[in-house]
Amino acid sequence: MASEELTVSVELSRGLVDWLDKEAAAADVDRGTMVSQLLASYQAVKQLEGEIEEESLLVDASDVAETVEANVAEELSGEVADAVDAAVEEAIETRIEELVTDRVTEATNGVQRQLGSRLDSVEAEFDEKIQDVRQRVIQLKQEVDEKAAADHGHADLDEVPELQGDIEELRAELDELREQHDRTVPDHSEQLANQGDRLEEMQNRLQTVAWVVSDLREAQQSSSGLEAVERIKRAAGQADIERATCEKCGDSVIISLLTDPHCPHCDATVTDVEPASGWFGNPSLTVASQLESGNEP
Image 1 (cartoon, helix red, strand yellow):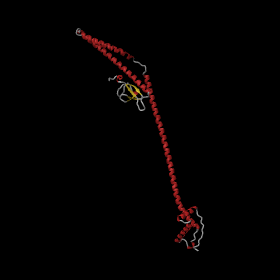
Image 2 (spheres, helix red, strand yellow):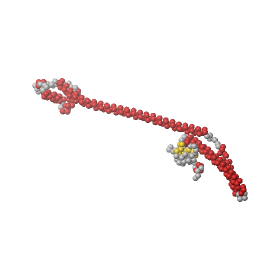
Image 3 (spheres, one colour):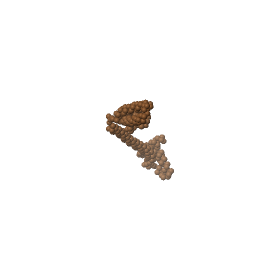
Image 4 (cartoon, one colour):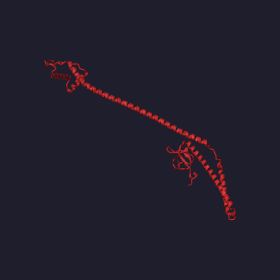
């Protein structure tokens, strides 16, 4: 009879069992009721399509299992595909982040190594140039010391005091002759021409001696100037000074180019070179006072 109830046992996979339990919980029925509803639905579909006859309403349990398993597998395949896509995307992002981090770290280390190498090269080049300048200053000082001995003298300058005495004697004699001339002109007009000739001769001798004294004085000043320049250069070499600032005008002077003890900018007489005071100071050329330099106040 159609109303008789039959018990059918079906073996389902774990996935189908889980799906049945999920659907039964959603419909608030037990698992057996859910299976019966599924079978009834399947039967109604077949009757509508006319694919089966009335007497074949008994359903093969294996067909039901395959159909249910196919439907469940389709749903599961979509969820698995989504899960796989999410896992792949996460793995790709993680790998890309690791690669980018490794490359950035490698590039940073490379740049730091190159910068460190360049800084070492620049420092070595700077030290080499400083050492070369020092060697050149020392060599120049040695050459100057060899060319001009420290104890050299000027024999011609020893005659300056004697010539100055001669000039004074000539001046006194000239004054005496002028006085005699003034006294004797009224009484000895005939001797005026001889006295004039003698006076002119004395004036010529006096002028000649004055020129000689002037030349010797200039030679003495030049020699003193060379000694002062050598002293300044020697002091600069000992203090490792290449440039110094003029104490009077404030302009920079290259010590090695000095040829006389005067500032090439303001012509002030310089006497010595002083090292810099403090970290930010500059070496300076000491300027002589007005009395020492020969200038009038």
